[in-house]
Image (cartoon, rainbow over all chains, first blue to last red; front, side, top):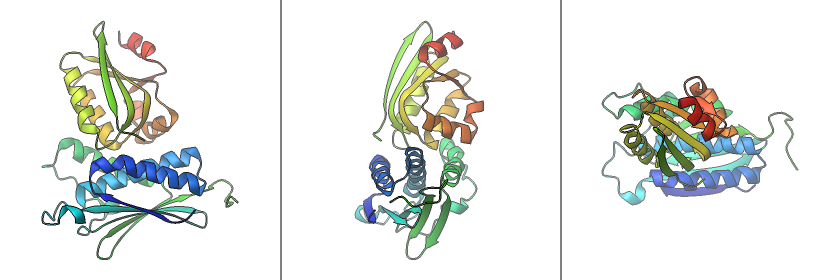
Length: 149
Length: 109
């Protein structure tokens, strides 16, 4: 598959288009139906975290700069998703203890979202260089280790 | 996967909330509202999830909040993908799952 990128406003209304985009890319990369469901879930949870946190501390960032970018690519036997934003450094891999002043539901489910991502993806990394980048990896053929033709 | 549509029917003291589509962070507030509205009048709830493609952890949070009110909540018709997440999260030990709405209603009745 060729690398594909989707850039959207960092808003929960964009979660459905993000899942659809990632599902299409995963199918193109040759993932199984079950793996496609796994990556769709993982990108949804990751994107939700980014949407909730990335621009929270920067109320002066104009609407057009509050974006979330999802890049899908295949590198060897790995399906790779990169989620990028331009907010302040926020590492979802090291989520801080819940802020109890936040909505109780939100606090309760934050850790669960990260757990889903780590459970259903084969690798999760975070980088910061002028913006956040979360990298999610999924093996395309975990059983055989072969790359489909 | 599209957003979620919720519909509620009540008979015999049991409410059935049918969910179509995906319960993500965008549709969770509506899901939460529907659950709270329903629980305000009925304490036995069946969630027909046979047409639910996906539920995010935010949706699971709303489910947990509903359960914590003391209402009896059963789920019917869960697909394998959602069941996988439920199992991984340990929710399979917290919520009763049934193959059909009829069986869930019979169990709550």
